[in-house]
Length: 308
Image (cartoon, rainbow, N blue to C red; front, side, top):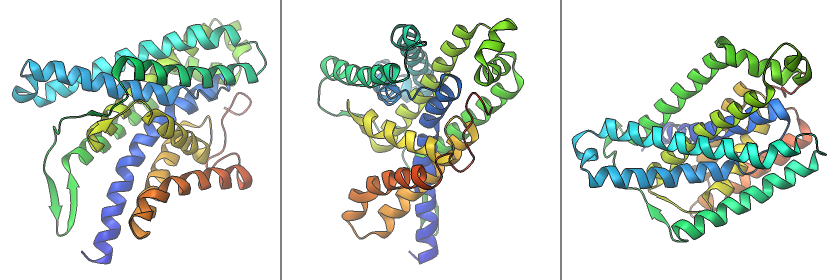
């Protein structure tokens, strides 16, 4: 493989995992943009989405649906996981965060950390501490000289881009999207013009949790396994992506996710093995520290209540 082909291969790998980070980061940035809360339990919603995907896929495989119609089976898996995680997101906001909305800002932050630990242990107790394995549904790929694009990579990037476009259109063009932007700009004024603030915040959690569910399924399919603690590291990296792009900025979360994925891919690809794979997390969190020091508003700037 030539040097140029190697660069292209790492670019494809980085865009693939970056698309996943971007989907998770959208949940962080949407919630922060409206209520200025870092929902550290968001990574666990992503992890639960992966588990629901495995369970649903196992049921469909037992019925023979994955063999007869893979597209229909994947559609069902995605919808079931999104609905299930949306219910988790709604419940978490309603029980853990809404009662603390007027509390000092440290209280909901501590609650978010508590919810993260609770969900980790809940999944460990109900699903076991051992890794769960995703069956290989997408085999094969496209070879262009020495560069290979697997079908699962095409699936991940395609679904991620479609969801991001759909979210942007929803936020900009729908009545509910306009209500979300108004709430982010000024909650008190939005309530005075008839917007149900509690409903908007709940829907924000629902949308973010649904996107995290899709990300969880795609990561499970890409790496072939999931466990109860994958949400912790992925959540921190998605938070890094959100900060990198500009917390509260939807376009920034997408950009930050892709940039972080590329950084990890090139770090793992150009540092001699096995250190590249071991130190790619170090590079990700080093970026977080540098951004917080030198450009705390992110690449595209923050968008919070006073700035949206």
